[in-house]
Length: 67
Image (cartoon, rainbow, N blue to C red):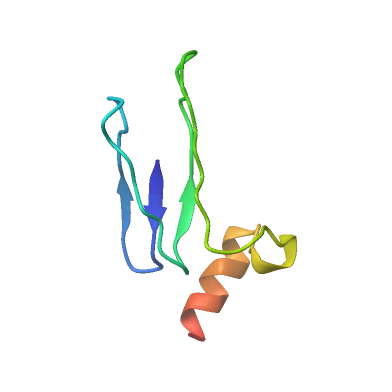
């Protein structure tokens, strides 16, 4: 999983079933290289709203710059 806060980019490998990651607001993330037996669980504090998300990395970078 790639995590990018607009200042630094870090890769995290969730390669055992006892690992997880908390993604705070305002962090760009990309999930990749799933194994065939992968299970992805998402817990959220509010229902999903498409308009809450930035889907373009360039737009994310602009939003971070203007904070």
